[in-house]
Image (cartoon, rainbow, N blue to C red; front, side, top):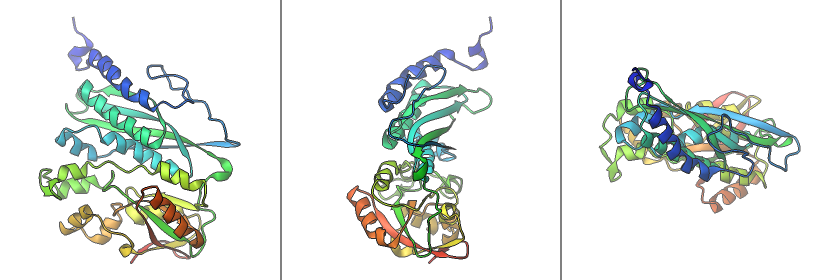
Length: 332
């Protein structure tokens, strides 16, 4: 008798992975979630306190950073990256993340590996103060090589309509504040893997592979706290495309963002990549260069906002200035 397992799909391993995942997802549940993992769909009610609630959504994946995780056999941090890439995006419009769903696909399911991936996703949800309400784990033999996984997800958040941050109030002379990144985050890894093929090279006293797996920083809690007390006019998550592509995404009108590259310390990993022959200007169009999130604020508020961020344990810098006219980003 031929069974599904003969084709490469192990249903029992799938059941076991779900059982292992449940202990992680349970830690993320907020009061507005109406059911637990295992139903056909996750159900969430709109929390109280919103007058004209708007749902804000975003989706993303981890990308080729996953290949570093495969080679290092460390799977419990890339889930944080997956959550961060989504929640930091919806945060740019002032939205509080409500819930997250993930999608994991692989050639051959290993319950412990899948559970480690979900452990990281759950940790990311805890950092973002949102709930992991469901997902999908797909075993696809012959489509993915054994030992490799793909990981993506999406987040849904909420904001009152009159509190949406959309860049419409940005003016000439406004200040850009940069929040430090935790490293490369989850962009530019196709280039990184090409120029750093060996993960056991010593870097700052440890294998460079560990540095490359440093999870993406989640900015939700400090930024939502700022929004309670300050007028934040625009925000940008510095992902693929670096400063050059992402900072202008917060502008509705034609502005030039002038960035002072000496206003903050460049992390060692970016100096190292530059030393391997990658042009610094290209790097500003590829990596976050040590700044993972950018705020646009009025000049009179900038010092107080930086002070507030520092008091919350963030490293924040007066990154540059917005000027009317022109387009794009000028790095000085």
